[in-house]
Image (tube, rainbow, N blue to C red):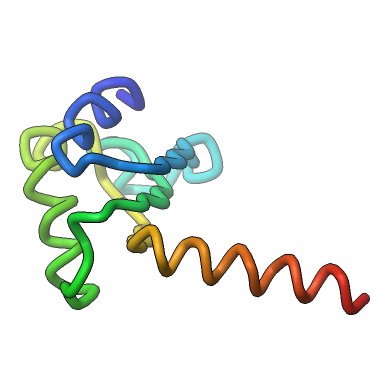
Length: 98
């Protein structure tokens, strides 16, 4: 499923894509029978100028066929390259000040 998700997300021209399958942590959960639980961090220039809701819609549109069969839950972090760079800088500064 993770590879299928990666293939479908390619339309968003990701500069970075981190996809984690958390399904094992949700074993026994009622919704687990309907599909897996995933965490996605996606950095794309196509997100520039778009609010978070629009970015999430873009991801859901790309994954639409899988959302109906195979994905039960999807946690999203969607960033532009500039936002990802700024976030990485903040993390570096915090590490240096400790």
